[in-house]
Image 1 (cartoon, rainbow, N blue to C red):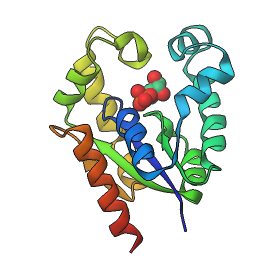
Image 2: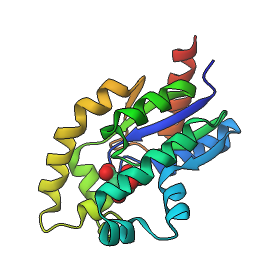
Image 3: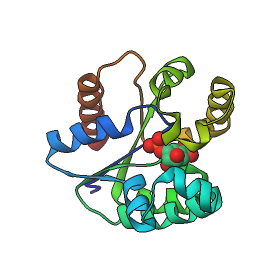
Image 4: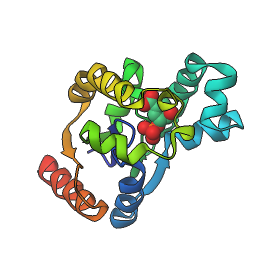
Amino acid sequence: MKTSIALIGFMGTGKTVAGKLLAVKLGKKFIETDSIIEKKAGKSIPEIFREDGEISFRELEIEAIKEAANEKNAVIACGGGMVLNKINIDRLNKESIIVCLTASPQVIIKRTSGNEGERPLLAVPDRAQQIKELMKFRKPYYERLADITINTSGMSVDSVVERIIRKVKDNDS
Ligand code: S3P
């Protein structure tokens, strides 16, 4: 039986905040792939993008997912772009139930405003347009990988976590 839960989905869908609370509630270990990457690289995600480029970041991400995917009894918050590499998908599927968090573009625009500096892909002049384009391109990838999908627009973190717990239980039975 799969003992880990991987949270996937676009930036600003709440993977990190929901993941932390979910891990506490279920008594599982919380892992964030972006943090693994930053620790390994010894620099922040924006610095990696700026100094080494997105391709180097994606290579580090493959290593981070590999490490996280081997963990049992964990909640794994995955970086939003990890679905772009099939190897990540195959690895995550082995031990984890995959929960995709979604939100409307309007909600994502709101949730990610003010911290564009932390997300290099959103540090562009027309952030709204960029979000819409990236979401459109990635949607089929998220849909294909998800065992469970939850739209978090307008929901509190508590309700998102409750819904994840309920749906994971239904998925197991
Ligand atoms: C990215 C999402 C980010 C981070 C990096 C790239 C993406 O993580 O991995 O900036 O390509 O969607 P979050 O989804 O946690 O913001």
